[in-house]
Amino acid sequence: MKIMVIQGPNLNMLGVREQNIYGPMKLEQIHEQMRAFAQQNGVEIEFFQSNLEGELVDKIQECLGDSDGIIINPAAYTHTSVAIRDAIAAVAIPTVEVHLSNIHAREEFRHKSLIAPVCAGQISGFGPFSYHLAMVAMLQILNEIRAMKEMQKQQAANQE
Ligand code: DQA
Image (cartoon, rainbow, N blue to C red; front, top):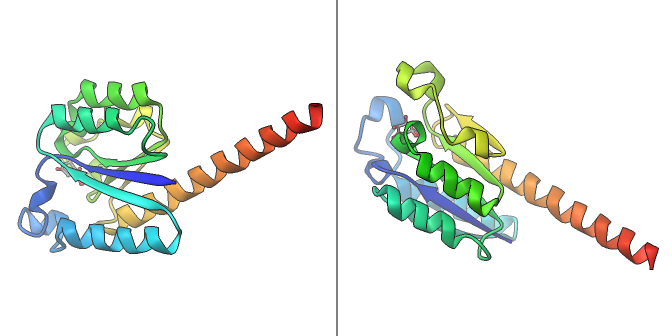
């Protein structure tokens, strides 16, 4: 089982940018915590950050046949990117949308996510802990899919 974590524009500046909103933690530190949690749970994890919309689309496409789940913080592209939404819909890999800040409590233009409708769910507002919650949600989704596949295999075997 492999989870791909995709981080959008300006998230490479965490720890520097708007600390009153995003806090002091750097992206590498968040990734360290996620890596440790993935290891404890026996799943592979990979991280990718880009400031470019097309590179984010390319990475989502690359997940096909490579990753079982996607955790994505599309950052500002959350509110604008039809291309990222379409890429997630195209690969049809279970995806969890994450935000550090509560986008619904901020400026009105942040209230709308073009990404959320093609995701399993959205986690928003818990700072770096949002990523931990996203990992927990993703592990649950992957376990449910695995259980469903095993049940279908069993049913098929019973019919033979
Ligand atoms: C963000 C929220 C977005 O509105 C913003 O553009 C970001 C970060 C968050 O994690 O809270 O860059 O995705």
